[in-house]
Length: 329
Image 1: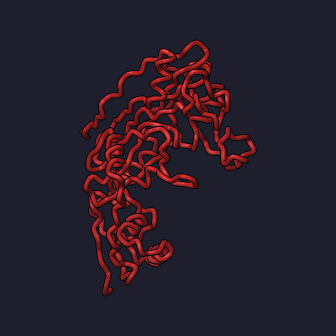
Image 2 (image 1 turned 60 degrees about the horizontal axis):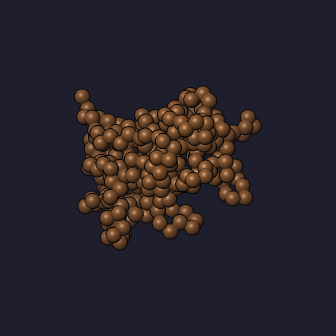
Image 3 (image 1 turned 90 degrees about the horizontal axis):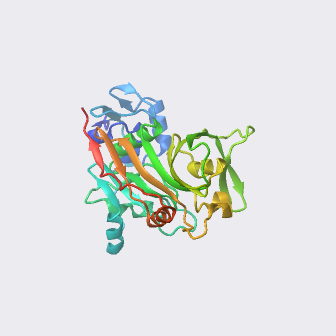
């Protein structure tokens, strides 16, 4: 058929979904139009029919039928101008960088994404992390506004797809540190409590689900007490095995040890006289399969307000290890 083209999947596009591949190359093509092309067999991968969710592999041939104006080349995305002083501050947050991944140490109070009342978010500032690339980095996971620490950015669509797959499959091991009010009993264990979202006067909240909640989401957190200051406070190491909204905050409150500074889920019970009132939850480190092979491990130091509380409570935190990437065997 005249106008039919064949495009080869590049190494960088490995594991990307077919619909997202089309969105990248043909952003003017509507989802419904693509669905019709797939349904009628006009789009094929290596000569075979494919679905929107088909994962692509390097070297595969994608048959693209005539698209007319819908297949026109998009205009290059305009790089957002960011104040040079702010760019310098954002670059100072980088813990690790290569051609595939950037890892930053997200500070307290910086929202990852925009929303009502938010004038500055990390998502809006991602052009600062291009480092000369034509590709704008992509968010592959989230941290709450007031949670600090390790946050990954993907520099290419292929890297984003592989990292997202690692999070879905639990191949990514996330380690958080928290200062909690009280001392858990037992000192370590597993919190297996499903969560549900509830609408309230002050916005949406997450709670431990009841048996009647049909939309409850399975949630599991492993915890270990690293140190404690009598019965008044403890330093916990938390490893979420699922990734639910506010999971760690709700799970800690559920075992009677709310995270210090978490007024949303514990009110005044989350405060301690003489200690900072900010949320004491820190994404200490992550170990994840690297998009180009091997494993990447990165850690972030304590934020200033948690360092102040650690000193006051007599907790001694080791320095973060240098970022390390193991090469594939």
